[in-house]
Length: 133
Image (cartoon, rainbow, N blue to C red; front, top):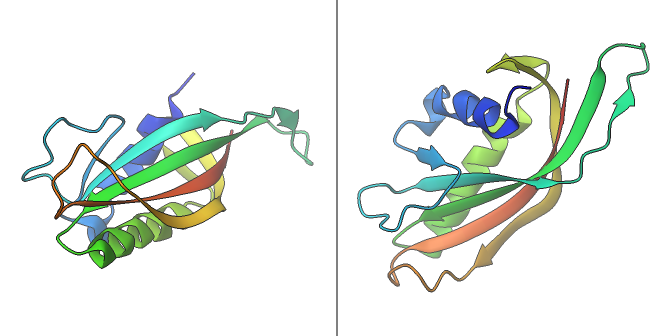
């Protein structure tokens, strides 16, 4: 089965509005030279059921979107919003072998302290619900 995180990361890396962003499924030990950095992590929440048209089985799962940027906290918030905008634009998009039906919000952007980074790097997180087949 194709990997959801790979499909989302492939899409994000191809978006012209996100030039200069770095992406992955793990936060590097050092973020120097990699900001803004976005980490996507599937958090579960799968629910499989047939579509209304008796099509393929859908997978609905949560994805944590974690963004580090700086030097100002507003930079991290704006970077997270840019990533979310790109994800919300995924409607009937085929990426890395998956068809993303839609991406919707589970939780809005929230600043979260990260003690593992310098004080000029700030983290903002959000969660999305991804429906795919």
